[in-house]
Image 1 (cartoon, rainbow, N blue to C red):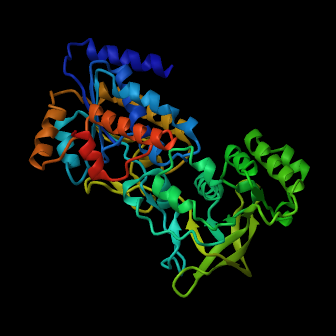
Image 2 (image 1 turned 90 degrees about the horizontal axis):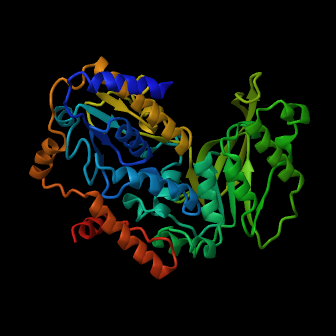
Image 3 (image 1 turned 90 degrees about the vertical axis):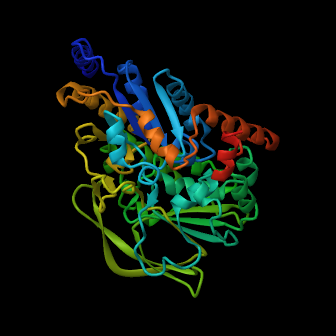
Length: 466
């Protein structure tokens, strides 16, 4: 239905004497940006679509967020490559919105702008002690082992036995799994060499995954939990009392996805083994809220408040603190309580509290749109991002005639290039990225890995210009 409606609108727009070529700028070279470009390149064959990315390399969250031991998730890169090689699509890396070029500049040069630069900051854990050494956001640890240039020199001390991770989403599980995975397994992935070197010296024996609510409200998915349960030389340790109120009649009434993961947890609880001193421990703990981190200089303990659940709906119950308090001895605290976006340009209407662009179903203003986590917040998986990007681009197609977006010709990237040249910005084209890609793969082959990511921007630019 949506497809037919979009096509009929296009016919009205382009068969009524309007020969102006739509110039479209997608700001952000991650999944949201590539999916938006893919859909528009297919539907608006007469358009010119330019993807601008802050870093010299494409793919955003797929390159920098997907865990190195999940190579199958990165297969979507093949689809993105086809999009980038489409005749009406260009990729330009190393362009920073708000620094190298402004939103007002882009409005002069393009009929349509789609902001898709993602969520690159972490939500802050607001408790005493967060400034102690070895208290780190999960986002920076993910960037450290995935090759984000700004995280390459992360000050993390793995000479410790117990780690507390605050949060129970998939990012928290990813970090726990990477920290507990045998080094010989990690060597086969595209994990960065600097993190691999440090992980090979790690003394971590136990990771406690701390959640405010109960097992029924846990945010991790069944795939991630299964991987933890099957992890080599690692035992999953549950607290039996966390599951005492989850009875069979309750489980039977749950929707299928939640039912399956609850059944898997209950099965794992029943099959818990005697702790082997040689094995590492993964310990999910529920109904606990972090209150304070203690230590003279580096973290030594975390104080946890014990919660109770209130509310009638089991899946949406809220956590309320009781007067009970516990302390957990730990040497590393990782905060994994979510990501948020930044206001890259002062003229972007931005909700600072929510950390997203103010928008209505992706539309910010006439000719200005947003897609992905920048517009929705950090929710869902890559498939959700694709659905969101396609929906926003369908809205754009409808708006082209309705908002009279093609009333005047615009120069597109040729206009932007003049400003970038004046500022001596080195552009990285798709052909330039291919050089970096080839270089990384060749480095990886020498080490028996899929690739060895370049983590220094200057080196990336040097390879791109060679």
